[in-house]
Length: 289
View: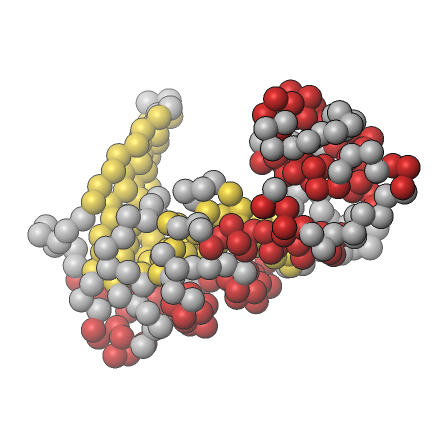
């Protein structure tokens, strides 16, 4: 089991009479279960029972299938810090083979607010491999405002060669852009008022490009009385922007205009929203919708 080499430093602290099942086989079953949506020890035991022929292709299962109590006992005895370090190593190795779009995003974990101590809810910043549909790495913070400091730590865990990193406007920072480029990646960053003068200059430039002959791409989606038209424009003639701002790795800027029509009780309402972006690549297939 080549994959288990990343967990070789984990110590088995189970009592000697509770080691009927191999530690690494249990971890492999748990990993497979989680990849298929399993969340609990019962899920892991059910997964093993439902997929025994598949598991026996690469596991011995000398003493049969483990029960949910076996998984529960295993995870109670594991050193969480050691397991976390080994798992990060495994994900880092996996990330080296991941290509395409890597989306960096932060989410507040449900029910993570500690009412007794008054501590803030836990906020996780994750790197999501869009093509592989897998979280490559995560960093926990206690507040959304700490996302700016968490992103560089997260990026260090990843191999970005051949990847395009997407981040919302909070991540549109010079240091973050420079790190992505230094690690061999490209970026597509949302741009808002947190980069005031750059945002203003990009808006001015893209306004000048609102001409019929300007290249653009348009999509239309509609459902349940709602129609959204998205028009995307990219501008590569950004010499004056770079003279003024000298943004790391910047090759192009773009904007998306979202026009939404909603009809309710025979009345149609139209709203328009415009978003701006920074690109470290000229030709991009990144979905910014």
